[in-house]
Image 1 (cartoon, rainbow, N blue to C red):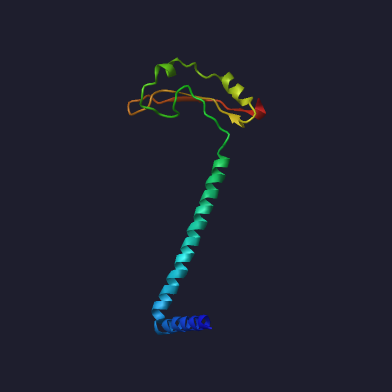
Image 2: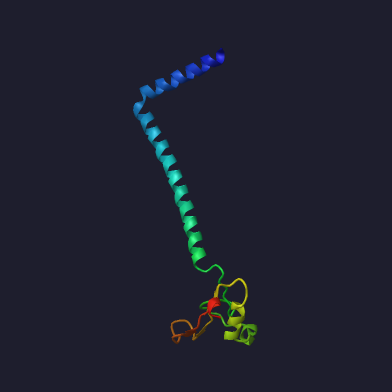
Length: 135
C-alpha cells in the first residue's frame, strides 16, 4: 500500500512540475529528442561510411600484390642498401609465374626509371598488363 502511495505522489509531483515549468520542460524534451536523433544519425553515417569503404576496397582489387626490387613502393629519398642494389630485376617471366598462381586475379608488371625530387629527370614508365584470362 505504501508503494502505491509513493508512486502516486511521485507522478503528481512530476506532472505538477511539468505544468508549472512548461518552457523548461519543452526545452528539455526538445534537447532529448535532438540528442537522440543526432546519436542515431551519427551511427548511421559511420555505419554507411564503413560499408562504403569496404565496397571501395573490394572493388580496388583486394587480391593485388606489389612486388618490387626496392624495399618501398613509391618515391624514397634514402639510398638503397647494398642488399637492395644486388637484387635481381624482376622480369616479365616473374609476372607470368605470379599470374599462374591460384589467388591473384591479375598481374601488371611495371618498371619505373628515373629519380625523384626537384632536380629529378622525368621518370619513364613502361607497363604491360597480363591477365589470367589472356595467359
